[in-house]
Length: 449
Image (cartoon, rainbow, N blue to C red; front, top):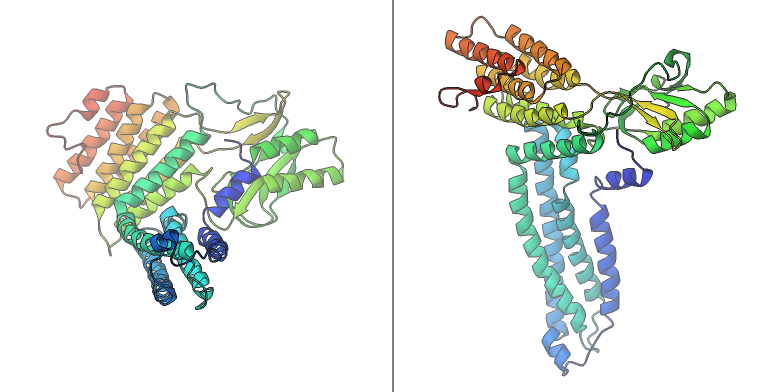
């Protein structure tokens, strides 16, 4: 589990705030307009003729047109965004809405439009019939008007691409892959220290209950180790990012025999601050949230109202790549030490069984009557079996194969049943080390959808 700082968490939180960029852009535009409105060269000067060849009446007309158009397009942009959010929630997954809220394109376009509106309105307010027009401010307003039109056209193109299910799947996949690569050390690196008998007895510790409810978003390991070192303690975190905790349930356990009641209270409060909870899951330290989003899209695609098993198979393909990445990482709980090499904290983690159950469970149940979906799950397991030689991982793959075969209905036609069983045997061949035989087929039918 990587170490997180409080400043990083603030940055992550600000990424989901839609109004921040537009608000800052509007304030900057307002200040710039007040400054540039004071620059009023004589109308006969070369600078004035180049920047603004018209008079105050023409300037007023242009500024009114830009301000009116800006506020209209802002309304249109908000409307399109709301429609996109509603579509993503109903047809794909409500957990994808956070990605839309974090989309930099939407915030950048709104920032340009708000800046254009604020700048134009402020310059319009400063026009004086008895003074030369502010040529520099009018030139900037003209450029902002053109930029707003370009931004809106780009936003429409971006939104059209963003609403494609393939784009959504790729976005979720890439975010989950970054989380895996960031927080899981590769097998080529030294294995992280695991809890062992030399560590304090977990059962002898004092429980730290949660004082609020929500999803665990991040665990600030650096702050956790620092607090444990200062109090001469050892801390077990009883939850992991993505877990849902309820007030009063176990959050952590501390072993600190030399601390009095007051010291225990201080340490417990520092542990609670290190385990950051919120009302929604985030992917920063929770790679499983990416798997959950992809699984949601697959399950939604298998619903009777949509009935799109190919999209479900594509989702499974993305999760296959993520699972293969996980097989090349050290999974499991990690002991974190202080600068002196003393163990101070244990942060738990998920194992491969959890991820396989997350990906396969709902999909195999909802797609049990569709051989395309069952075959996609088995192809995914074949990829995982081919990528790992860990005996524990291979046992989990075999467990999933048996669960999938148990879901095959008796009403399925013989040809489809044979296809599913053939892929199951290919998974077992890959697990046995005969990878080429596992992938060899007649016309690519075991890789095609």
